[in-house]
Image 1 (cartoon, rainbow, N blue to C red):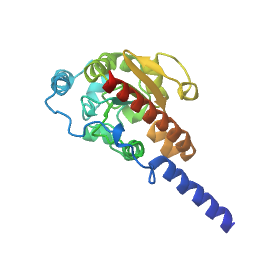
Image 2 (cartoon, rainbow, N blue to C red):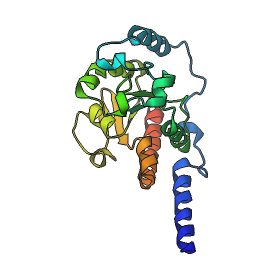
Image 3 (cartoon, rainbow, N blue to C red):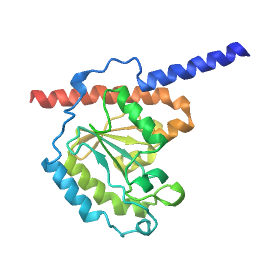
Image 4 (cartoon, helix red, strand yellow):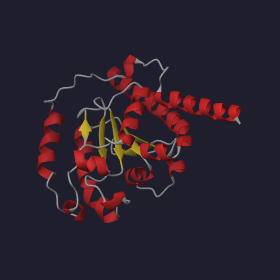
Length: 232
């Protein structure tokens, strides 16, 4: 019994190392400029757009939210991560991915040599659905122009959808997460990939390994896209 326990413990910590990248040598060429211009055109446009929509009451979530969760990160990011909707902690703080799932997302990003300051993070919905239920179609349809405008301003080279609901919304295809993973889609001029939501990894650690495989593909493709741009 003792050997079985030690074996499972070793397997667990190996999964953590594989996902969190504790022994990974980061490729500095992947990193965008950490000191992005806070007064860039994209930054000013995002700030103006936030002021325009932050008091939105177009659906019932406007009356139940604590804070409007717009998005955070580099306004000129090459990589845009999009989740489903704010949770309890996000609703309180007004920032996406700040709870346990957010802490895990930070580690996932670090495993491929990035930080949340270098990417941009947003959600399909800007307000928390009561009891963290799935977004209603009417709610996501109402929020759709907001996220589309953010994408138009940021102009990311690559979008990473976190979770099936975000993936379905962005691809426009009613597919399982398994069918979306490993494929390349497009949203406007941006390439689009789909992987697990960090909250799902907290519920099921067995998905951490395939998520790490997805993130390796994200890392490699982002490097290709940024290299292509610098050459052209």
